[in-house]
Image 1 (tube, rainbow, N blue to C red):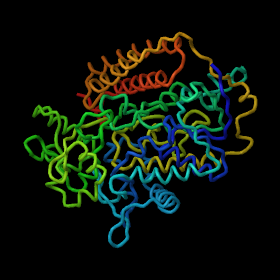
Image 2 (cartoon, rainbow, N blue to C red; image 1 turned 45 degrees about the vertical axis):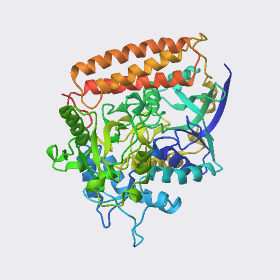
Image 3 (cartoon, rainbow, N blue to C red; image 1 turned 90 degrees about the vertical axis):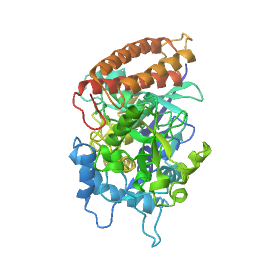
Image 4 (cartoon, one colour; image 1 turned 60 degrees about the vertical axis):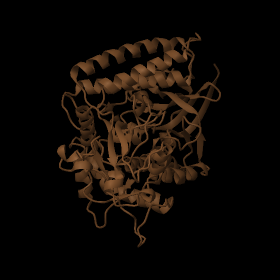
Length: 526
């Protein structure tokens, strides 16, 4: 297999709000950026699917109020420094980039002021939005800015395989004796050419998103398989909080490859969860009722389904909400209408689905990881902001702010002295194929994915027990070992890379859940 070798100043793996923001900020500082996406366009990840909005600030709000809401939702397992950083610096990043620079057309009231929503876990309205397609509106503006910037090269249909590091890959012995291990870029699979590219970079940023696709039911896009966490872990960067997988309580109960999200903003607008008898039940589980944090609402729905034997519960917006439903939630209205459901007249059938990963690659407030020259931003990173459970609408804010922070830190330290040494660049080898046995079978790959997803859903899902976790650990460890052998013997392909990453991500989550014996937030053990 031929190899192609590229050199760039900054390599960003992932093109959602976190990766694209970092790319734009770095490019404005004069850096040459290579922005990778596994899709055929940079705006097809989870960021564009976000419905509810992004935290801004209530009038005259003290950041302490937001800090407290984040801490309460996260069961006070949060990193206080990250919480303070986001609460104090986040709104300014929203203003500078989304409002002033990109001029995202957020909804406004009749007086022209930003329309503020309230969602579960928030003590006041502080979330700005574009109806129920906020992520799409943000990504449209951000993607357009990235595409027209001369310092950014967008590389589509590229799947990162592994990070290049001085300790693991350098052919020169001098770099293996150095105490500091350095990230030097990545091996990347070009799905158009069916070739592996060696991309060498002075700095690398992981922005690969979440892990939802390792579960049977998820709101996430197909690329959300934990690849960033897996590559970082294999390169010996520290990962943390892998057991904290947030399940969104309300996804549309309808057969589809990806569950359609019913935004928390619908409950914020007054909608209530009811069982098959039409009884509102959330007040029985929590005094905050339908506006309780997501982990509590998710378990309440699961308990209600088990108690009634129903395959779903219902979200009644028609009966309880006083807003103009079609105007406030056009995306949700139209999606439900496609399957013959009129939400202005009848309740929406909903079930929980894997939604957001609160763990990931450990970073500081500059988005630096424990591996030199490697940064991580967005959902693949664990800043400690979310603790054991994410507060609604913090994800886009964290992605935006840490994208800015990573760019600022790299720009601050970037100079000729801090580039990858020429000898280290020359010492990095190109990819060598592990095997030439043409034994990749789509049926086997599909079966392995089915094993991963059903195992994670049944044993490492909403409710966990010691026997379930032990079974999951044994199954994932066995599958991972088998895949390692298969990986060595079979020519590389995107489907094989994804399967390997997904299996290892499932193993990391299961291991984290097995080691944490305390029920907290998203990690609930019986």
